[in-house]
Length: 112
Image (cartoon, rainbow, N blue to C red; front, side):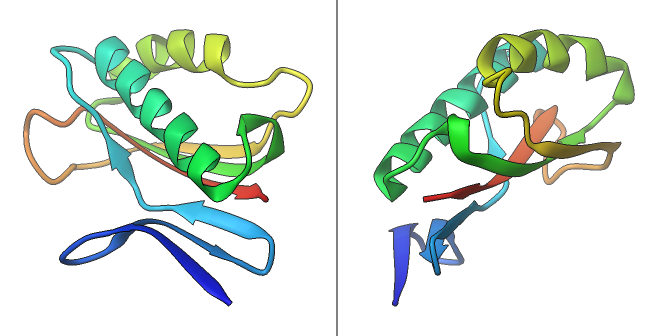
């Protein structure tokens, strides 16, 4: 059985199947990478809760930054958010995002 969380016009914000939840790439609001990362991680907390899990069960995270110079800002927020006893694997790359105001996008996968 597949559970689709917050389906929209083009995609769902998350999908649960076989005990695993995968989110879409999540973007956030804010004037800088710090604010956007904070907003994104709050949204991810909500999606994981809707799937019946939490950041303690993260398996992986993919992070895209408009400018790799934002790496430290994003990590400052990430390090305060992530469960240090249950760290996921992670990749972070610089990428052109969908619109110029988007500085950070994060997608995660977790066990349910």
